Image 1: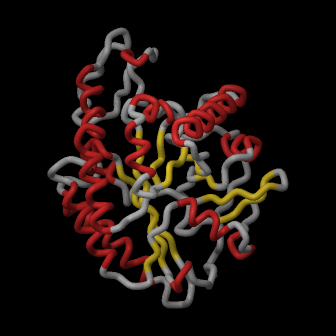
Image 2 (image 1 turned 135 degrees about the vertical axis):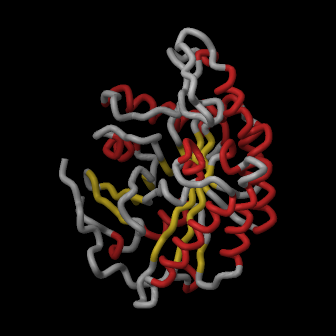
Image 3 (image 1 turned 120 degrees about the horizontal axis):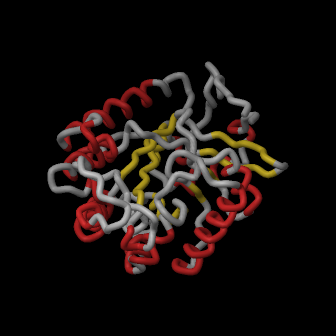
Length: 302
């Protein structure tokens, strides 16, 4: 596969985001609770990624500890996130596994009545790397149609649990219902690709400004760690816009992780911090995609 190591190169696009803003902050809440691998849900095995996952339970029996960790996200954690978004008037993108929404349909109304976006995160919380093209095509089709049926709104963005297959982006184009793909981690700006004479916006995601670094002792311990890292990232990106260029920053959240009582303060501190800043745009990802599509300045070669 051809890889692009230059991107925009030294000269980043020089323009403004809407309302004269120089930095876009995209906040994504991942809804995976109920879509993790679980024998209780009829899967062949159990999810092995959760807090304090030192004991792997046999794939022949339910892992009730793991299931309980995931349940915490929607029973408790999500309400802390909703309350903070309401308090600071934040509109976010909720990247949802369709099986999670099927198990918790009440969540759809809570998301949409606050005018957040629902995007697609696959059927289950699984990697697509080993799927064949036919299998993945069916998953994309079913995820899209299920979210449309449940919410009444088509999901226009896609993000697969890492990693994707070599076919993912092409299949999104073939499907025809998606404006953007978030399966990239290679830039601080979105970019537009033309595939089969169709355009799709690539909105890079991030694993560093992400609460997943609380998991497995991989970086964050206290809520303040999350705040400090995100704050320093934001300040650096702002400093890079003095030449007239723009930047984008992604924040990744999970209700079962950042929604814990000892961590949610880190998110609150960050939202409070960005609300005091000027020249910041806090859009849903669909708004970023719609802004970028008609502008040739974001177009890159594959």
